[in-house]
Image 1: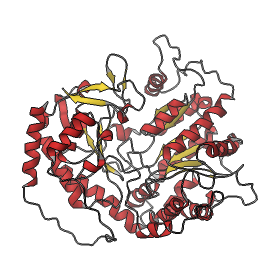
Image 2: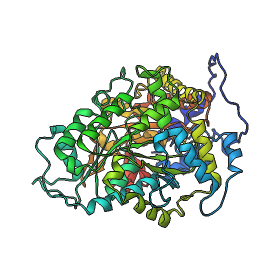
Image 3: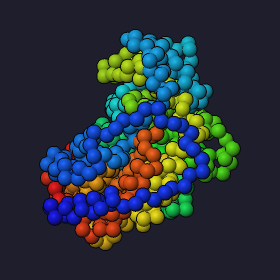
Image 4: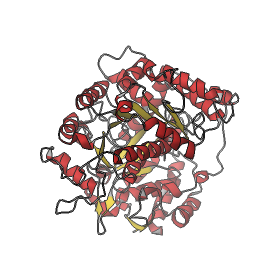
Length: 546
């Protein structure tokens, strides 16, 4: 549809000629730039970006060449961090020994300092059979390994996987689980056994994908304040405690563990309160179910607790982190987020936690899996220098001044969009701004038009890359029509890499978004030319403008 793209290219050109507004600042940044890199493309290359977008990338931001993005690349905040000079310096000291490199032991010490004394290792235990820190090359490798071993363990247990769900479950929860299971109208389970459920406040896309790939059922239990879009509620990432209680009371034997994502990325980057974490721990203890964290953005979550939860304003970030992780039996983390590095992940399991007691052979099997897929457990797919970057990153990420400027930057970006009338998820979260595409288009868009995809495509022509995380990413195609996710999501995410951009960069993205919003009636729908039925389809699909 060249007439549409021509229209927006002309508008984008005119935007570049407008006078810049002056912003007012009263305090300097707590860091300074030590290295800069000039871009290899120009913001004026609109026609070249259009050609790449349509001919090469099929309108898919994941398939668009990064070296042709002259503006803000806000596709992800994972592995896109600008590392500090201290991290680069530490990497020069990396020990590249194949087994038991020095960095591994430093990492074990830093884990205790960052996450708390309960994550220490009993020195009398034989490392390799009863390890508590498992290193991987990134977060989704952690998820794959963890749920692979968990699925194996569950298959050894007797389970009446054909039994129907209890009618005592809360009706909306029961319906949601049945949808995830793929129930036939006759009430029989379409999926193969074992029939086990992994509940969370909201699983992210690859987490959900890894769970489903292991024939487990991921179920989201977002709090009602989030579903009701309560802009005055600061912890919209919370889990619905009533639904959790109902699930464990009536289907406890089908729930091997409860998962909590901090912050809640799928739900708009929203934080989880310590009160909610504590209540989840109480409920899981009551029913004897282990409790895990998806801890990718743990420090950002701790900042929100400090700033917005009663009783924590005068507490240090590290103290809050210790309290958060004191409740958990284990966690997995993509260190590409709050590890402040470009690669790395880890699974941690407490020596004396409920999970270890429930699955005493698990850690030994996870070690075997780690050796077969990632290498020796003491480097886990990472170079020794990368481990040193992780250690320094875990020191930096709990610094108050870092978190203050990091999250305030997201907040100001959101404020600029609100000033322009753009509907976003409020309050703003810790890693991204989420544009609410239902409100952006109002009644002018049908679900099958997938206009959020067209929005991200046109924004690429402007020179900025965002990501659709809604109807297409989390929805499904039933063979005849698109089925939106339940609870419904229809967002576009602008994920801000850590320490990479300044406000001038983000505000220029906001202006391009405003231009699209002001002309939203001209944004077309898209055809899905390839990939509609694939797993994790948003990474691979190709589209064309209608």
